Amino acid sequence: MASLSNHEIAQIFHNIALSLEISGESRYRFQAYSRAADAINALPASLASYRERGELEAVPGVGKTLADKIEELLDTGQLAFYEKLKKAVPPGVLELLKVPNIGPRTAGRLYKDLGIDSLAALKQAAEDGRLVGVKGFGAKAIAGISEGISAAEHADTRTLLNEALAAAELLIDSLRAAVPLHEITYAGSLRRARETSGDIDLLAAADDTAAVVRAFVGLPLVAHVESAGDEKATIFLHNGLQADLYVLPPSIWGSALQHFTGSRAHSIRFRELALERGLSFSEHGFKRVDTGEIVGCASEQDVYAKVGLPWIPPELREGAGEFEAAQAGHLPTLVELGHIRSDLHMHSTWSDGAASIRTMAEAARARGYRYMALTDHSAYLGITNGLDAARIQQQAAEVQALNQEYAAAGIDFIILRGIECDITPDGTLALPDEVLAELDLVIASPHVKLRQEPALATERILKAIANPHVDIIGHPTGRLIGNRAGSELDIDAIARAAAATGTLLEVNSGPDRLDLMATSVRRVLEL
Image 1 (tube, rainbow, N blue to C red):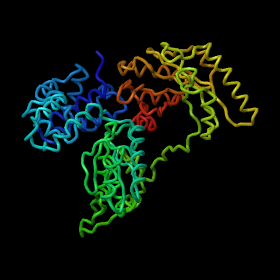
Image 2 (spheres, rainbow, N blue to C red; image 1 turned 90 degrees about the horizontal axis):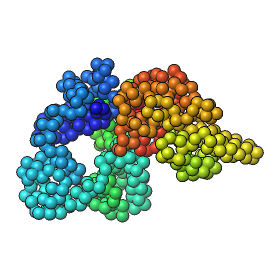
Image 3 (spheres, one colour; image 1 turned 90 degrees about the vertical axis):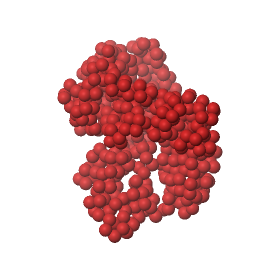
Image 4 (cartoon, rainbow, N blue to C red; image 1 turned 45 degrees about the horizontal axis):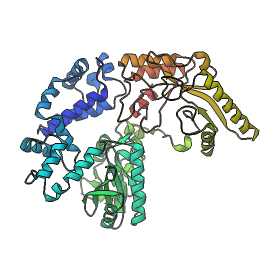
């Protein structure tokens, strides 16, 4: 039996946290499982590898009790404590939390008082009138319950970064066109460029806050208005995505933007630094503890300067060492679009791509690139119309003709010949070495059998790294965010091997991959 993945164990802990909260357990108890779930999801290596090294209790939020439960899950695939808890709080009760305005306490009451244990049961209860008189469900709430259930049934719990970003930018453009604004941007996890978002947080600065809220809830993009006041509003878009708007005076723009952007860990540490200087901090700005004087900040630079720090880019505000780096003057320089010089992972119509080689070359030139690498799929399993040795030679003729055409025209641009070669389950490559040796660039990627035991999955990648023809390991875990967890790898072992052979580890920019993930990238750079 394959061991449970980090994601699966984290999901179990997350469900335990919700179940305990629904049952009315102490905040300390359910938050312990929630913190551990978040930490496990962010680990760069499998829990099994932490166990092998005797380091389970070194995982943030995991003490002796939770370490024992992790070992039970790794050994048996289930947890006796969780199985018993599911009898008290059926898994279907957790579905109720997807409905707007139904929190754990309300879900608990619905189950205990009315026996509602699923979205379907809640929908039926609303239609039958059984919600009348239930605390928290007035006439207005009951009238909108079916709409809320429908949104919950069709909406994913998390939205990919590119989809959330597109929705946020459309909302921002629409609101700018509708009403005067000093400032507007997205905040929260989206501004930190997290791989997924639960909802969209928008922040705006304006002289007439109520007018902005009215314009916001009246946008054609809005399918349902959950709530609206003079400064705040919550709406649902037609795709089921939730968006929250907070409008504030321009004088506190900087403090509010900082407050609503950082992760919980970042915000806690920031407030600690403020208190060390005799200041408390909120979205309204700083308040001197001794006098009560309010000090607003119109820019984020002012906010960080008040605690003696340079501005910290939003993408770094995760409570992962950014304060120490800022204090030491060692904040990293983030990669911007202008830094990119070429694209080394491109598929054409020769395999499963949507454009010809010439079309992609012209697009690369338009971006100012001086070279690109053509890396169509190799022939393996017959799924992607991949290239075998004969078709690689045919493609080479087209590439050579294009390169000669550019050279004759005095155009400083080169197309490199490459391949994305499958790493088979045993770590060998889908094309022979003599074929790979003819190419300028070889990406080796895992695409199948991604649920191997961590040791086998790691050995598979290590074997590919050791091949002298491999330049890059493509999307090393093979994950698809929200659909496939991917392989659990010993990132430390892979990073050391890659460093020793000069092999690159890809950060695949496909929004449903982003593989390697951020925590793994940080660890790789450390090594």
